[in-house]
Figure 1 (cartoon, rainbow, N blue to C red):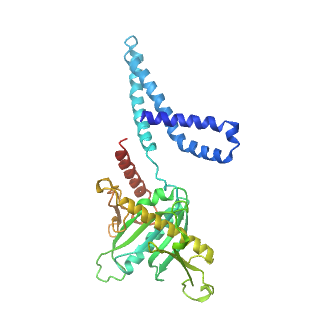
Figure 2: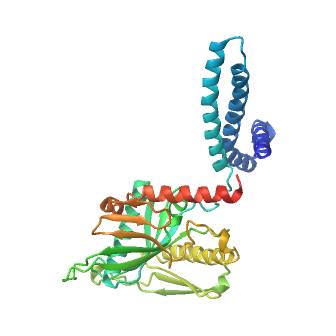
Figure 3: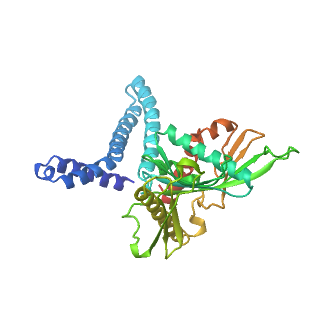
Length: 356
């Protein structure tokens, strides 16, 4: 770790010199690139300086504590030594996290897909509740939610909904929500009071940009059709809904939420790129041995990740074993403790894998 820190500090100092150079500052593109790298290294460089300072103070405190000429001073030095040891341990922990390779998708927007699975109408109602939960969580974080495509029954039930979450760090916070979410409760239509179990599946994809995945226009089939509606004045007279199919993979994306065909096409293309990129990512993951798979979860929709139990007002995450008995608050978007626990688990596993 010492060699890594020395290398980072050297590069950080070099960038600061370059940014102060008048010739470099005249090149706007280079200044932008250097400023971005400077910002990415600043946290580690600051921690490295603190680490060195604490290590130096530890050596001085250790030497003073061994000095027998002044017993009172030696006692104070031993107390300071204990505190400095704790400080060094804390900084080492922060450095281990800071030195972990960053997920390049963490700061991206998110494409989320929620689908009703087992349980019929009850599963559709639960899917609608999950959509509200993530919408409320996004609102609490200052993110914007835009629906791309939805298939509703008109009874408050959702068969499928695809939406975008727009905001810094959205993917880093939501990426572990993929999988099967299970609800246990007595449906309104159940006269015998028997508890039913229903599921809804989630997929969380980082929004892919054009540079992330190469899709040829020749590989696309684009269909334009009339948006579906409930009738009345809202039914569009002009076909604006867009369906894009990626012919090589068969992956399809639909958007009919906007009144503009151009906007619908742009949104559908964003979903398609993200799905194609996700397919490639999953292919790469298949090459990873089972022993090295993240214990946070594979993100597969068939993987049961969380249970929402109404009779016990309980929510349990099956990957972290975290349980909350505040079901109402969780469904109102207060899922921060679950997100934090999953992030902590991911970091612990990455530290272990990196051998830091």
